[in-house]
Amino acid sequence: MILITGATGNVGSELVALLAAENVPVRAMTRSPGKARFPAGVEVVAGDFDRPDSLVGAMDGVDRVFVLPPGYGSDGPVQERALAAAAAQAGVSHLVKLSTSGVTFDATDPISAGHRLGEQVVEDSGLSWTILRPGTFMVYLYGYAPTIAAEKTMYVTEGDPVSAMIHPRDIAAVAAHVLTTPGHEGRAYTLTGGQALSPRQQADTIGQVLGRPIRLVERTRAEAQAEFDRLGWSGPRLEALLELKRQSAAWDFTVFDTVEQLTGSAPLTLHDWVSENSHLFD
Ligand SMILES: NC(=O)c1ccc[n+]([C@@H]2O[C@H](COP(=O)([O-])OP(=O)(O)OC[C@H]3O[C@@H](n4cnc5c(N)ncnc54)[C@H](OP(=O)(O)O)[C@@H]3O)[C@@H](O)[C@H]2O)c1
Image 1 (tube, rainbow, N blue to C red):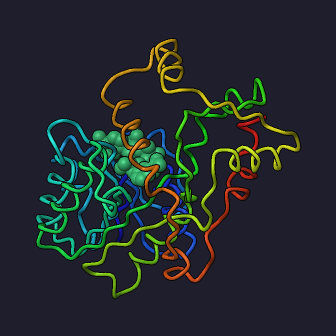
Image 2 (image 1 turned 135 degrees about the horizontal axis):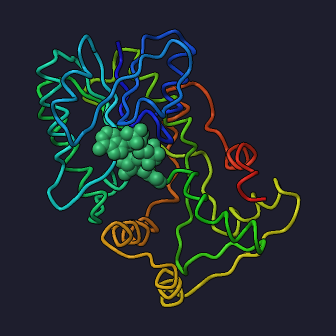
């Protein structure tokens, strides 16, 4: 039995679906089992990283766990610590942790720093482990959808990264492979899409799918901050995301061939992702 944490999210929902389609016994963890919708045959269990007792029960009879930590606060990788302790107690053999490519590139932003410490917890757990370090998810473009729909305009901040964005289904495909085949113990894989695209190229891809041109407007950092203030967006989570974005301009364009190496299929493209989600931009 494989336990999937983060099972209702971008990566976890795709992973649950892929494993269920292969008839792999899978248990999906969520804090709200009553609300979650999973394919037939998937076991659902209530579990909360912040309630360690719930984790031990969720892992009863589980051999492998996909570890998707939802976030990091000032108190460090408490969620990985709770999960690793529960996994050892429940007799789990292997942990596959979702991390971030910022760790590969020695980033110092709070999100990458949190994942680096979380990786250490998993590596020190006494269980066998594999780390997956994806770069920017294509779902990042959700943030641009409202103005693309309303004004046919994508507002970006000066210096925004050229990005080899990855489709969450490709991360899930790698995770499914790693969770169901041997030979990945003690390995860390950095994962990206197959093409690095500038914000202009990202807007053009959205425009191609929608069948109309999308204007790109580059805001200065001060203008972007003024817009965040207008929307009432602030706090450590936003600051952490902005710092990761600033730092990632130095590497986010780097393309890794890991998805194809591990799954045997070329990565899905941004055109694929926008086509699946075009209703959001229309
Ligand atoms: N976005 C990017 O570009 C990017 C790039 C690299 C790495 N990452 C990493 O990817 C991860 C996010 O993945 P995602 O986008 O697939 O997630 P997501 O869509 O944001 O979903 C978050 C998931 O975490 C679960 N969750 C939240 N709080 C929880 C708690 N206290 N206990 C148990 N489960 C909890 C939610 O489940 P319920 O609400 O159903 O309980 C949900 O399934 C983060 O670690 C992030 O740093 C993101």
